[in-house]
Image 1 (cartoon, rainbow, N blue to C red):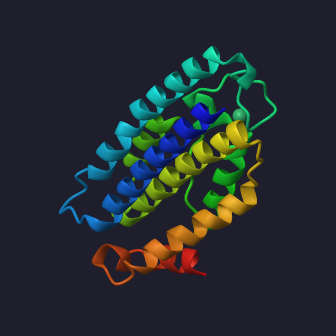
Image 2: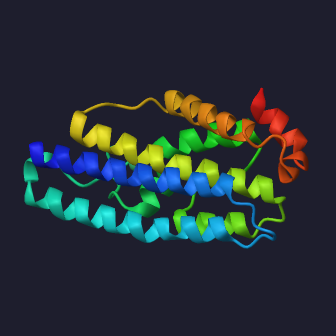
Length: 195
Ligand SMILES: [Zn+2]
C-alpha cells in the first residue's frame, strides 16, 4: 500500500519531530524554578497521539486488507489505543522495565497524561525529573515506530535492541550536561547511567 507507506513515513517523521523537540527543550532550557516547561511540552503529546491513532484507525478501516485494529506489538488481542500502546502493552512494558532498572528510575505503566503528571508530582531533583521525562518520551517514540514497522513492513522490533538504542541516546545527551549545576547535584544518578 503505497499510500499507507507514504503516510506512515510522514507520521514517523512527525512523531520524531515531537520527540526531538521535546528532548532538545528538556536538555537546553534552564528554567529558574521547576516551571514545568517540559511538562507542558509533553502534555501536548497526549492529544497529538490520540489524533494520530484516530486518523490511523479511520484509514485502516477504509482498507480492510490491512488487517484488524488490535495491537500488533503483543499477543493480547487488545484494541490499539493510547492506554494500551503506551501503557499496558507487553512490548513497551519490556523496554520500560529494562530502562527503569538501568536508570533506577520508576516509570509507571500509564498513558502520556497520567505518566507526566506522575513524574511531575515526584519529590525528585530537577535533573531526575527531566531524565524520567526524556526516558518516557523515548519510549513513546520507539513504541510508535515499532508499531509502524510491524504494521507496514511486517517487521518485529526487538525490545532489547530498542532498550540499548535508548540507553545510548540518553547517555549521549547526559554527557553534554555533566558539568551543569543541576547535573552536579545528581552525581550518583549520572554515574549510574554513564557506565
Ligand atoms: Zn500490545
